[in-house]
Amino acid sequence: MARGLQKDPYWAPFFDGFPAAHRWLAETRPDVAVVLYNDHGLNFFLDNLPTFAVGAAESYRNEDEGWGIPALGSFPGHPALSWHLIESLVADEFDTATCQQMLVDHAFTLPLKLLWPGDAPVPVRTVPVHINTVQFPLPSPRRCYHLGQSLGRAIRSFPEDLRVVLVATGGLSHQLDGTRAGFINRRFDLDCLDKLLNDPSALARLSVMDLVRDAGTQGVEIMAWLAARAALEGTVRQVYRNYHIPISNTAAGLLVLANEPVIRRTPAAA
Image (cartoon, rainbow, N blue to C red; front, side):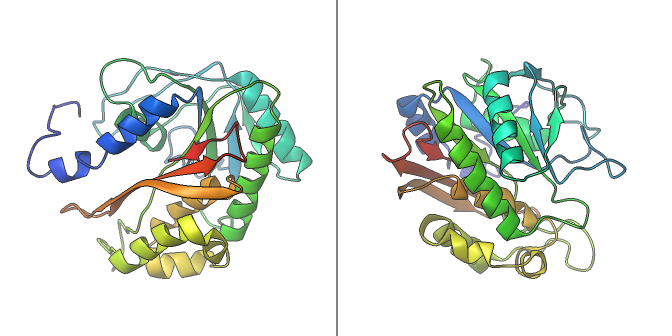
């Protein structure tokens, strides 16, 4: 994106998967994005890595991660919603870390710029929700599913009338190191997208090691998708889906789901 290569033959099949999501976001006009992601060492490192953490800041700053990715500007927060989510999660017995200052890395910033491209700031306020998928012991898929259910209840009970989109990032199947470096499991990825729509509880029954086996060591990031899906109740329909395997070391998926109309303050997850 920084080099303007979206139409390059290598990158075009990836970027061509997003215009339908752009149109849907333009139609629904969410006020806030609750972003479920895993930090890769920018805000947390291996010596201090919470299982779950929620940002409660006025804004969230991006910094150089050491990979040559240009740092983006800060992202506005929504402290009132953040504190409501934190208090609700703790009441549901989730011992989350509360971050009144928080750096956000590529797992947070780049998906938002893919969903709202261009030079203008992202037109939503944000709440970061970090899920540890880096250092064992990891939370189980079932625990992440329950986290998502708790987030959904909290969003729906927030007294201000907001349109909230849940953005889950990471995944799909990939492994960056070891003897299976470059591992991609297309069959698992497509089945995962199906189950996220129709049977998310089936994914919650998997273990972390099931995910490592079938999706690769970094494929466990799918647990963020599972948590976002669990926040939705009632009738959930698929708005759009795209799946692409670039000539690289990770599969790329996009799934847009809309919640009809039971959850009025949580209309969708992307």
